[in-house]
Length: 449
Ligand SMILES: Cc1ncc(COP(=O)(O)O)c(C=O)c1O
Image (cartoon, rainbow, N blue to C red; front, side):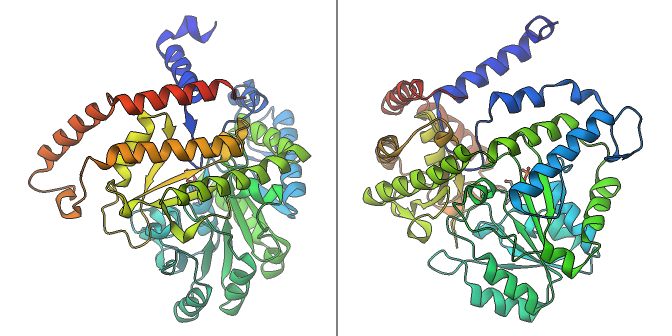
């Protein structure tokens, strides 16, 4: 029976979300639109199967087809990235990073060195609020005043702290990552080096960002960002990794299953295989390069409008904007832009004086709108809209004082009520709703896959 007949409520919600995704400019840098082929694999009968273990070594019967699916996904990943070993079973990026740590580190004893969350690292790179910071010793590096990775400082920190693993890669870093330099630093202190390329995997495949493969031991990537696959992740071991530790592949596999996970999501594995095939086509290289071109145009235009871009621009798919010079914080900007049909996320900026829920910045990116076919002309229009939205909000001298924004203590309820009323007001703003209408008109010209 069709979903519509079985569960009208969920059917309608999915249709509603489909419409939202069509009608807005999706500019959260970690999001994308997958192809209908990927969705078809994801929604296939492979979801019915249990297949704990690995190809040809399963704990359940009936896995001949699943073995072929998983082997094909592995083969495609190895070829695309040029690695000798891959595990395609991680449910997502966070469990994949967890698996790497469990494969290589002693909990409570060993040390992870990663980019601080407040400076663009991911939670799983050693943030004290995540398992990575609770179960391992951590030491974090930061960006320099200009918003760039400071490799000399990272080297000094590594020499001092002697981490067991160094994580390079980020969630909100708009610049090229010098994996070769990280490789030298890790070698100097005999640490494992993990490149978390979740955000930039598609750019690397497309040749729009240097590859970490020759320089690192392990590469983790989610499959659902610039790589344009289903939600999921892969852990790859490089030649350099096998040279350092010939057992690295086995250690990773054991950490994923049975160490951390049970049965793999075979429908997800099939969809990853499809995405990897799509990413191997010449059209994907064009796509990846266009993501960067679009981001650069957007960065140039926004700078012209007086926006302060962290690091002064971008080399990749994302822009981090410090709104301190505007009278709007990141939370207000994100809300107003959503009302105007431009979906981005609020984000802390380096040395942010504001609390995480009301940070000073916003983060936006071009992977999803590039998939829809938007180019230079549309980037200029988007920059103009963003400027109009922020100008419209600048009159609202709101929530600027960090001391009034602590999430506990007196006044918390009054503040929530204030914020609720404010949201209601913004959702009725005529100027923003007019921009949303213009956005919808533009979106109609660029159908989603
Ligand atoms: C760099 C990086 N690593 C890991 C992850 C975690 O991925 P997931 O959300 O699939 O757990 C993310 C997700 O945002 C990320 O940006």
